[in-house]
Image (cartoon, rainbow, N blue to C red; front, side):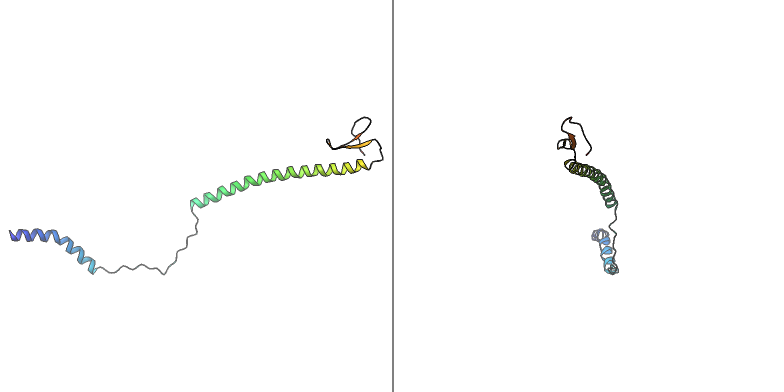
Length: 116
């Protein structure tokens, strides 16, 4: 009975002993840390984010261009009106007057637009 107990104990402990022995005699693993890996930071997510930003920039650029064109047209209209007002006020025609609401030079008698 003692021999059966020893054999079963040996069969149970043999794998543990073998595992412990293999750890003792295994070579030490050492990682090389003398190399530096630099990633570009370029990933699918960053490319998608950059594409979305570019699309938004293009859309806002289009809107800015429209706004700037509109402002330029308003400026040109005011500039022309300013010049016409000066011409109207300096006109030799005594019946010419400047109408601020319509930005036109009008005749006092007829109310029609005149060119000074």
